[in-house]
Length: 268
Image 1 (cartoon, one colour):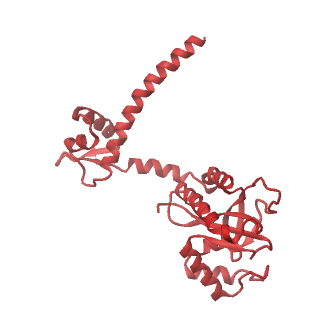
Image 2 (cartoon, one colour):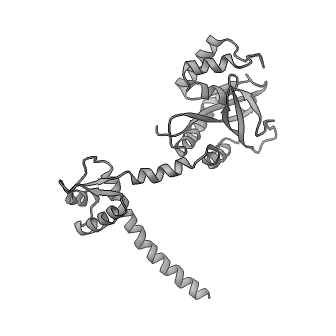
Image 3 (cartoon, rainbow, N blue to C red):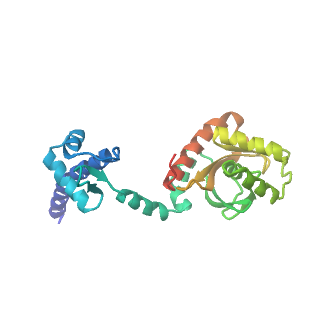
């Protein structure tokens, strides 16, 4: 039985080696064609992928059969189709923010060892839809499903910074603006300046504005249409998330927020 398994594995490796080479060559052709909207001739493709014309011709015929490539009958040039876009689009259409973010929120937590929150917007509030707890003695009291105002949270401000002024004003006017702490911004003109700063630096800070003793750094998440669909943040006590660490923390949050946005189909 063991001998049989070994034979299968060896034969499988040989077969996979051949398949991988064919796939690599095929993908190289598609990558080259994607750079030329007018298409390329057989010889031009052969030179660019460094393969014999007979090999390229055989692979092109397969791509034409599978509708990834077409040939212009007048010029004899080969052009890439939208088939790959259609395949990728199916993945994006079926992707929700929670599933798209799972691996990255975990990585972000491991990178900084602070609790990570993923939120979605609900009217004038944010809703915590995921939380990755860190291995710390001081823990955040947040829970999945909890709601908080947009105007005084890092995730809320990060999302608002990417909305048009009319929408921002609507959210402000329909929120109960109150001094949750001494640092909460309750003046609209000051709030607009805060959003401008957030747009410039790419991240938002909740500097004890929602809860005393807690500092958060948040970054918005966008989908394939460029729509703001949520945000991700790092939260921690001010004794750990100190002002001198904010910029380096923000760098990590931006990195993983961008990865989630790309999973959602957003193109930078």
